[in-house]
Figure 1 (spheres, helix red, strand yellow):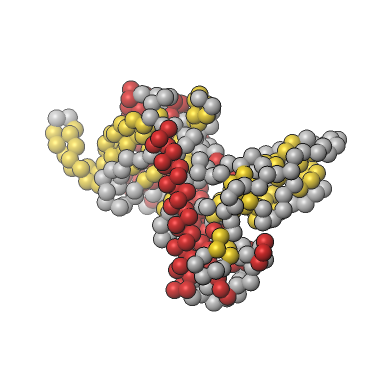
Figure 2 (tube, one colour):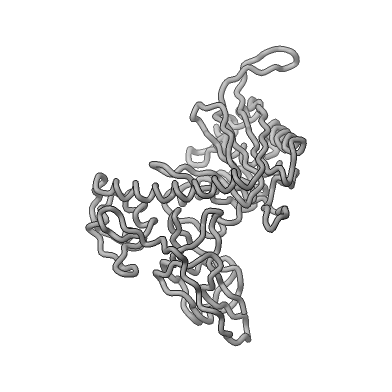
Length: 377
């Protein structure tokens, strides 16, 4: 008999609102099945179950806002008899649905999606608790877009997300002794290989430099395990797998960093596809709970922004974060001569409780080494 509980979907999450059950008592479930949708300040998250069995009892009702760890359901294995468990404790204070300045009750994800589609929430009928508008109401709406009317709802959603980000980052800087190591990587070999590889690919299958950087970072994390894992209960728990968090900027503002599971094991084509997929679903508010909670290391790239470097803040309970500036022409020294070449500046932010500058340098040099042989990635 297993208790299925409200998961923690980020260091900033204290509670979540159960929006919808996708299963009912008597349904069989297996590891990885999506069984519920939960609202957080960062949107609607599809919640996975991690046991095989049968749904014996649902302990929470849609509309309830529950603290992390509160029991949501009982999953019975074959031959088990249902046992009573404590009723879930509602979170205090309740965070959703929220009411905007217009007096409309709607969940954060519903506001975000309505703003993205240009739908005025005032024209929708809510099916959530107390008539609140939930994500499904927006997704199934036939209302025509009105971008200006939705702007205030988008602003309200982003305000809540900024609060969540601020809470997590303030905790990180307060509790984690950060240290930083930087290194500039010559991307000449990677750029030449990328141009040749993309020459034979259709546009939709072409690789971006970000995929090569992500793969090199994932491989280096596997080689230097002190940067890959979680710090909890006053000790470091290294991870045998590399689940690379990918920082995704949301349209209009905000940031999320869902995980690409086993990133070091994916070939470049699969990794590029995974990066595109997770970016699309992040911006559409369609992430899974495992993607929000399992990242062991985060990568944040500035792409073609033109900015040379950025020092980041570690996402708790992770112990490291890697940032990459925009690849650009730089003056590099090769064999005693100064040459112009495409390069990128990487900065590692790491937890001094787990590693030190020597290990941080070892990690960045490993990333560099992998990028010099892109054909092996």
